[in-house]
Amino acid sequence: MQMVLHFIPVELGQKTRKVHLIDAHCVKNKTHYRAKGTVPMTESLFFTCAGIKDTKSSAEYSASWRTTFPTTTTKQSSKDQKKVTKYYLTNPEGESIDEYKENDRIVLNIATRNRIGDSITVSLEDAAFDFEHHGTPLEDDTLSGLAISDDLEQIELKVVAQKNNE
Image (tube, rainbow, N blue to C red; front, top):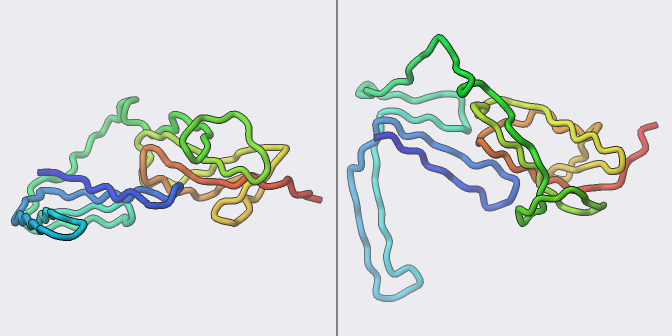
């Protein structure tokens, strides 16, 4: 059985971590009921797997008993090509926006296909405003070295006043 665990970030703009469990098997299932408290029931599943691939690491672990391996293809179809399919701006609530003002928090959404693990550079090219990412101003409105870890990246930015580049 193949499984993918998605670790969704608590903060907007952070990347979702995906852990692929290859040749996974459930070895224990434990259910616990409690008559008191705020968590009346817990379910614990214990898995073992022959391979692990994590979006936070380029390495892939394989045990000797692994039976499923990635297949290699010599010809890449257009469906499998790496591509940025769409990019757009939203407010933090996910509503699409066309305009923004100073001190607004906006989210740059980048939809990709087959780009997980790649690094891209995004230029916002706004003559009226500059932007900050995690409190750091973007030089020339450019976000460099953005690591793609999901098919939809969401990067929170703050709109700031244009700085004079003299």
